Image 1 (cartoon, helix red, strand yellow):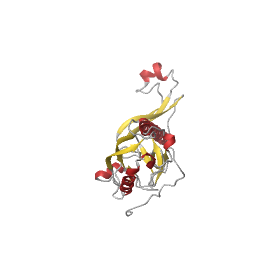
Image 2 (image 1 turned 45 degrees about the horizontal axis):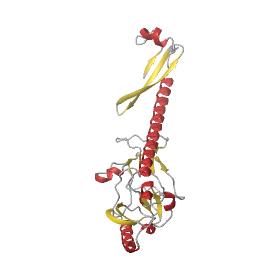
Image 3 (image 1 turned 135 degrees about the horizontal axis):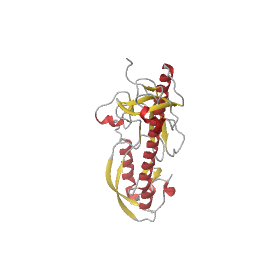
Image 4 (image 1 turned 180 degrees about the vertical axis):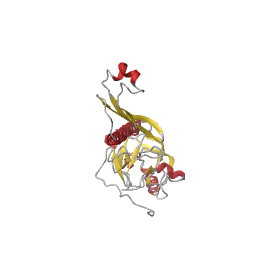
Length: 276
């Protein structure tokens, strides 16, 4: 904590009084340094128009307000960065030249981007809610059923497959597909993410600077296709990509979704392991 009871006479500020402190009407000041990971990142300063002796209570108040103000700034920056990231993700998906097509376990189209619709000679609006079989040759329907079953088993594959355009023409495509367990993941047409906050509604400081995790991240699934996203301790190996650091104390999670398709309740947070 830095205190200055009179900027006109203080040895650190006297020579700058006429040029700066005097014209700015700063006769006294108190400043609380802001430190993250042992590194100074700024300061929160309160000024007085008249000389004054700062009390212990005032010093504690300035330190507390400064810390809370900086945490709020960090939170807003993280939220803004998250929004910008999600906006970039949406632009990439919606304007990608590659076709992106999402269907439910029964093959009903939930989302397609403009690139996919253009390949099939139609529009995204015309495809939503229709069966994927409408774009499959009759001779390939049994193959589609086999591939859908592979998706339900959590297999991720890349394969060549013929699709039928809206005008009846045949096109060959290279398809990479992945299965999301029915009913478990957020039913959205754009993105989903979880952000970690403490009980004071501040972002939780952590060693890797990760405050949110979601569909835009490269996540590692369990063998049964499910996802574990939140652990207090950093996991090893491939599951490190799924780590959203959580504090040992109580915390709050904020779920953000884009263009949710239907009412939905997220699965409950489950506590595992022992206390101690």
